[in-house]
Image (cartoon, rainbow, N blue to C red; front, side, top):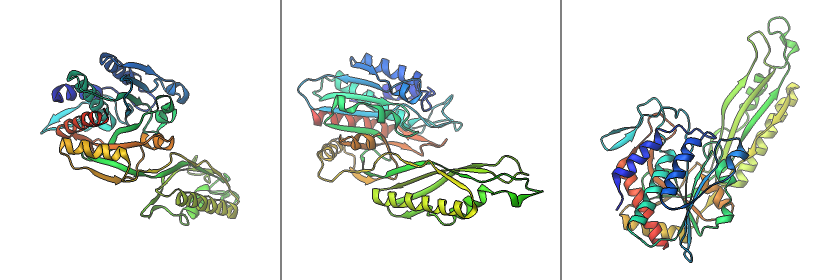
Amino acid sequence: MINRERMINNFIEMARISSPSLKEREMADYVKKQLQDLGMEVFEDGAGEKEGGNAGNIIGILRNLGKKRILLSAHMDTVLPCDKVNPIIENGIIKSDGTTVLGGDDKAGIANIIEAIRTIKENNLDHPEIIVVFSIAEEIGLLGAKNFDIEKYSPNYTFVLDSSGKPGIGIIQTPFSAKGKMKIIGKPAHAGIAPENGINALTVAAHAITKIKLGRIDSETTSNIGVVRGGEAVNIVMPEVTLQYEARSFSGEKLDNLLTETDRVFKEMCKEFGAEFENGVTKGYSGYRLEDSEEILNIFRKACAQVEVECVTKPTGGGSDSNIYNEKGYKALTIGIGMTKVHTKDEYIEIEDMVKTANLVVEILKEMA
């Protein structure tokens, strides 16, 4: 039923639109028109204004009174570099020319949703009330989802099209997260004349880093310092250093303990060297776990069987808008859409996987009718 050529052309048009986080205006206008052409009620919320962006979440509703309500979700922003994307079709896959990301994360999800709704309408298929949200700023902290008023729409179930891996994958567990900046404030001095009068912030940081836990802590927990910035000149004892830190764990208790221990170590090292410590690390999204008996998984399994794709449920170390929706009390499942090597210039997606995903969404809609 899916119109393969139409969906691929639509995806390629979207891939060419530059839409970094908080600069999704052109993409928002594009998808807004597509939803309007489908006869949906279309709204734009104030998420962009709240977060300093130039566009809000785009919301579409296809009414069907008396039916269950399903929310279909994908995000409009892409990671950098995403300017002047040149999609290439080769041997059944779509990729960029190698100078940018492709943007399948998550424009493939948007293309799947739009094509599935078109198919439902063209074939006059029974369907639930369909709510669509194309969110902003997912890549920098799920900001669009955090500002989306899901309570206003109260969906029975939510499917988020935003996972790597083959169609049929359902993400049943994601981690709790925390991230932010840690700053060590030392004391400047001339490095060649009187270094003993200074306090080298990097030295303090180095001593602390040797004592904290980084990398794979256990099967549930990771910890990382990804960016280090500091220094003014080569002949000045480094007065400040800023570390960008993040940690994740499937266990909220383990994450809390890790954050407490990391904070303790840095404070002790700063005290020992006479430096100051500012900890800006805060908790982000909450993790979730969907039990095997959840009805949303039963719906997903039945749809997978209809499309003849293997249903695989598994955890992931990443987060998505599902984290926010589940945290707010609305059952949400992130599903695989075939995107591969995301967040790199080698990103690609197989056309056949896009077709399977769109057909899977159609079956999910039919199952909830």
